[in-house]
Length: 533
Image (cartoon, rainbow, N blue to C red):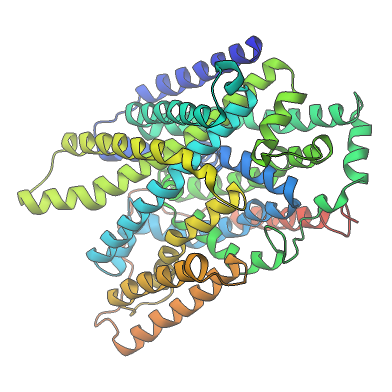
């Protein structure tokens, strides 16, 4: 373990924490709105940074580079095509949320269907975070840190033991951030870390190509582009991790859910001080997502040439960073990786607590006491809940090492058990006015049952994203059929209850067009027509 790398890592982590807590200490955290939504005072720069960095965790660094190393660039579909979904969310979903004044995604379901649907979906959300999101973030951060600093050799422990140790370190730091600093501290640290990430997006390819070319960037780039060109192809075949056809089926659905309904993501956007700021923030995050391949995928391409055969392919990114970067930059990269894990973990904890306190605990207390519940009691319950689920996540995370077919594939496949059923019933709620609450409940149970059977009990020989799309269509038709047979007596109408200005961003369509052109251009560049020729 290099002393310079460790010193730069500790210094940068201290600076991020210091800036976050100094800035967040100036904001009030006396109410749930203060603690969970930064009192709705975030501008577009903070929203864009928070959206981007809450999405980018060590899972992407580890999982996507592993996929590039094993397969090809087809994995960029998750990030590049998310731009299209994000723009749809910006234009249609966020205005609905802000106009209705909701604080959590299930709040919309209460307005559209009924309270029991809201409770059901809140519970499913919590299962998703506790079983999939939080443990996976801890595991990804632990792998990156263990490999980058060679923790097992330094401490004289096994790799398995190092994962346990680092999972608890990341979990404890993340918990302290969220519990003490609240949502404001999370968004501020996201902004600082996003700046550093863009610096690394240029630095890591530079040093990697220079290393590959024995000191010459030109020779390194020539090697990258002239041999093993199949890895440069983003147009995935049916046997690749992400077949190209899936971006038009299940991947679109997953991205729409993630950016438009995932609580810890939506919470970043609806914490804005206006609809205009939320839409500008989403556009900024879109641009950042299009730049992601520089940092998240190019290192995997370089690693293909540096390491002909690796036993543990999850170590691709941290191993490359350790081998090509100067020691002080290894420390900076480690701090950004750990920061990425911590901030996504923070966001997940904060949103889990938001769902529990506002959608489950507060209604329970109000029913029990027949009156108002003090904000202080709710905040205390929220912090205690964060401690409990954080402990569970830390105990569960190390066992992800036994997952098959790659870490990133595990994340997407398991996460879909919970996420797409939620997307289905919210989407039907958006586009229909008479589909009743019973249809939402039946649809939720039907979707989860069919998906689990098709993926884990009686595996279907079809990519899971295509399966998702098929079950989504069948479930949607089932809900509409129930709505036709037993429609709501009074059709749903959106009632304005906005807490912020809801005037949309005037120039959003021009920027959306540019972003979509850039998205297509990325696919053209990483295709058999250009780089993979």
